[in-house]
Structures are given as C-alpha cells and as structure tokens.
Length: 623
Image (tube, rainbow, N blue to C red; front, side, top):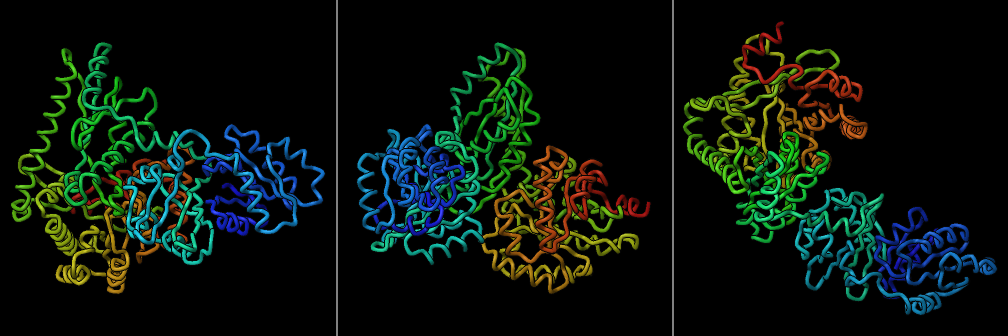
C-alpha cells in the first residue's frame, strides 16, 4: 500500500503494517505519481488532515495518472467535509474523517481494498524491486528484478547480501534494522538504480523482514529495467546471418571480446555464477556501445567467454570503451572480482563471407592465446635473466611546474618481441602463477635503481605499485620495509600506490598494515581512483596521503560540463579528507588548466613526458 502523510508518515506506515499490508510511505507530495507507480501498490492512502490542499493536489495527480490506484482512501479533518466533492472529482474512492481510532482506519482500508487488485496481468511481486529475510532459513530472498539488476542469485546469505552495499551503507542499514519496531525507511545507493529508499517492515510475530526498494530521481520504468537486466545479445547463428546480409552492402568491422577469467569464476563459484558474469559483461558491452551513437552495432555471444561486436562503420572508439567497461571489477557471489578482457578487431576483405570473417577473427585470438602462454613459460627465465626493466614517469607540481616525483613502471625487454608493457607482463605472470614473484622482483628492482640515482635526482619521491594481493600476503608490511631498508633508499621519499581496481576483501586488516607503513615513514596513495566499485570504501577505511585520479576521469574533464562536475567532486572530496591529488594520463594543456582550476595539485602524463630511462629523466630534470 502506498501511504502519503505530510505529518504522520511513520505512524501511519506502522499502523498499515500492523494491518497486514506492505507499506511504502512518503512525507512529501513531489513526484507522487512516479513514487506510486514504482511502489507496485494497488491502493493509496492519503492523509490530508491539516493539509487539505496538499492532499488534493496529490489525489489529483494520482487520479490523472496512467496507472491510477484501484482504491484511494483520503483522511480529512472534519472542517474539510464540505470539500469532499473536490476529492471525488480528483479520483478519491473513499474517505475517513477525523477523529478516528486505529481500528476504524484499518476497517476503512479493508473496505477500500475489496476493489483493489494488483495492477497489470503479471504475477504479484514479479516486477517489484525488493527483498525479504526469513530468520528460519537464514536467507535473503531477492525479487527476480532486483536479482537481475545486481547480478546475483535470488537467494543469498545475509553476509553476501550486505556485501552488495558499501561499508558505510551496511552500517546504516544495520542501524535501521536494529532500531525498527514495525516500519522504517532508509535512503541508500544501490547500483545500478542509484539513490533509493528502502522501505523496511518487520513482522513482530515471525521476525521476517520485508523491503521494497523505491528508486529516487527519475528511473526508467520496470520494462526498461528488465530490458537492461537482460540485454538482447544474439547467438552465433544470428551474428552470421547479420554479417552475411551486411557484407552485401559493404565492409563489415568486427571486434572480438574475450573475458579473461571466466574459467576461474566457473571453477571457484560454479556455472551459475559464470552465467551471471556473462550476462553482466553483455550489459556492459551494450552500455559502452550505447555511448558511441547510432547506428548501433550488434552484439553476439559466440561461445564460452567470447563475444563479437559487428558494425558497418569503424569501431576504433568502441574498442577502448568496451575494454574500460570490462576492466572494472564484477560482483561475483557478493565479492568484487577483477576479470578483464581482451579486445581485438578485424575488417572484412573482398570475397569474405561471415564464416571466413569469423574464422579469421578466431585465428587472431588463437595466435594471441599462444603468445600469452609462451610468454608465461618464458617469464621465469626473463626475471632471472635481467629482461625486466624499470622506467620512470615524472610527477609534476602544477603550481610550480617542477618535477617532484616519479612512478616506477615495469617493462619487459623481450629479445624477440621488443618492449612489452606492464599489462602484458602481469598477464603472463598471472597465467604462470608468478604474480607475487614478479611483484616482489619489480619492487626490489625499482628500489635498487632509485637508490643508485645520480645526485640530480636524489630529491625526487618514488612511487612503487603494490596490489591488493601483495597486501593480503602474510608479513606484507615487515617484508616491504625490509626490502626498502636493504636497498638503501630512504623511507621518507617512498610512496606505496595501492591499485584501486584490485580486490581488497579485508579493509580492516589492510588499514592496519598501511598505517604501519605510514608510521615507518612511507606515504600511501590509492591508484586508479574511479575505476572500481570500492572507491568510497577505500577512502573511508584506508589511511592515505594521496589520491590518484584515473586517467579516464582526468581526460574526461575536457569533455562536457557533467564530466567536469564529476572530477570536481572527486577533487573536493579528496581535499576535504586532507589528501593531495595527482591526476594521471594528462595529455593536453586544456586538461591541465581545467584540473588546476579545480584544485588538483600534481599531474603525470605525456604532457610532461612518457615513461623515461634514468638518463632521460636526469636530462629532463636538469634541463
């Protein structure tokens, strides 16, 4: 039941709950039509006592809505009985005049409810966004729509369900549940709905909890949410038919997309979790393509973890957008998991049909897979043979233009393939099971190189990268400090950058370890801020000195005004927490000027220099 009361919302909601209804309650009349529609209720109760004009406006809005209440009971003061005609004209079906008791109101509602049946032909609750908790089964049951939207099964443990929220939101919800007597409401953020009101109701007899989730703002209708939750992705046969037809008119451009860790998800969590991951990846691909404009390419799932995107136009801009979308961690069984993906493209040639084009795309994939496997086999010899090298990218103080620090970046000097970047290097390490070994080697190498710098560079700070996996290893802090001291590099000039997109499950323990590093004289930064779902949780939980804005956000500042507002919010939030801000990936004077105007203190990127050798860095600093 939808309840609107301008003065006694909570009291009426509790009374309605005692009568056996699920109450979705509001205190203000703004957007009442939308709020009633998203509540899924068949009946509305408007409390216009002492606020007749506001109640009349709300009744009129509901009465004129496309989806009107099947019954609308309006409570009025006795002094307003002469104006009941206006309420009936507005669409009210029943009224009750004060003073009245609890039983009188419940009886009036029961009479009104006789003609109120659930709207639409769908099964009750099918299109609702909500959940319930059964203390006997000790499970949280999600409505089908909510389960699809958050990429989870419809039955979760309480712990897994809570992990869908940030740490702060979890604490807020626990507080609301602890204090609830019959009904309450709490405003939170749930992706992808954004800001929502969770209307909570407890059954005192059974201990069961019911919740309806009401999106705020202007959300899409339920049908649109369902379409987003289950995007229309073609199968391989459908892709071949489309490509053959398109080839008649001209060239066809394809992107092959391969999820990197689907096999790990299937092994660790089961096929069901893998299937949900594939659905989530399909949505992200669709969303990335939606931002590229019309005409919209088609998306098809070929097999396993493979997707293909096909279009009659070049897909050069779509490829990095898809890669960025899939680089964000996914929620897998209540845990954040970085998955990643490879994206590669081909263009049709004269005489191609769909089979030939897809076969060539598959051959390219096979060649790449063999290459990564070969690199994985060669990696240990590369580490022991000195093929891993360190380059240094300058970090510049925006106010003075002076180079004040550098970030250490790993490169593989492959004897046949030339220079390979950090992403390929660590991908090979992951395939070979050498991630920890490689991370230790790169840190030690960077510290040793920096300790032997020429005098012109000895004032610079050095940033080294550590992963969430490094932090989770036993003895992390002691081992890192021993490594620093053994190198001879001063602790006071070292910054540890935690990659934000990594999974850090135990923030409490991570906070303790990082605080230990800070007490030892090191500084701590969060890297790639804005690429993962845990950003705010990291800021709240971890002891930090710097926040590094991901290059995608820094480059977006030169886009439309909304992009600039987002970057401004990140910088303001960081500075209000006492953190210095470093922008990564700055490439143009315009980006730098806008970042400076918003209060960013430092930057790194090609506008100053690409990653440099020690000799090139010295020449730049002394120029």
